[in-house]
Length: 337
Image (cartoon, rainbow, N blue to C red; front, side):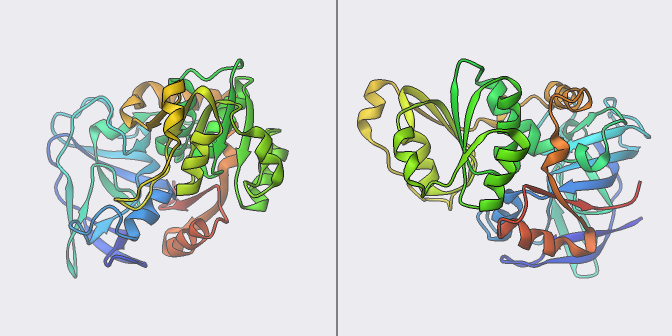
């Protein structure tokens, strides 16, 4: 069986559309008809080579919605016909070997959940069955943007008694703001893109500020929590600077490997905390159904995150728009349901 897929052949891109031969399923693997896949800045980082070049050529994409077509030996968590969210985060089930497809140009590597293709071989422990009422373009965001962004708020128990600053209004930052706002948290959003600031004000009713505005001076030292989602060195330093003396800054953005940030040492003595995002705090089998339920009952309108839908053949236009700051979350239509 063959599938059309968007493959990273060379560092720097673009992705090329290739026809891949799907290998025989191994123990713990499943064959998924991919419906929609979410575009994430991690894809851009991979294209730029920030995650290394040893696995190139490589199939990209790590969050999706899909339908289970076949299952390999040992798989018991899902069955053919199930509607699933696909996620790069390990959950319950077997951890299957990484996938190696074949193309006319040779081997193409893929991880346990690589989804920019019509059909994909995915490890059992990267799948979660979800309600069919969640539209597939929306469901594709549950595996990363929503699970991680909203999850930061929930796992750190940020609540209505706290003040929160979010730096970077993309898929993660918008998800964090959306969840925090639903809990009654007093939020401020920071971004340099005017339309994103306007979106936050209108859609989430949250205060939104450009970091270059003079009014930010009065906000330094006022937040209990900050979440950095932009991948900017300056934003990471601001996330720490804007905390109260005992506040916590959570860094979710990615910088070039080896990049250093600077913080005021005195803040550590007063009790400030600077921490990275522990993705092992995500529990897909609990979190994804939880956020799917919130979406269906109207308390987490994650449909607002979808800025644009692209066809698989046009994936590079989506990458360009993401890089240029024209999206919250773009999604790729990988196949038709």
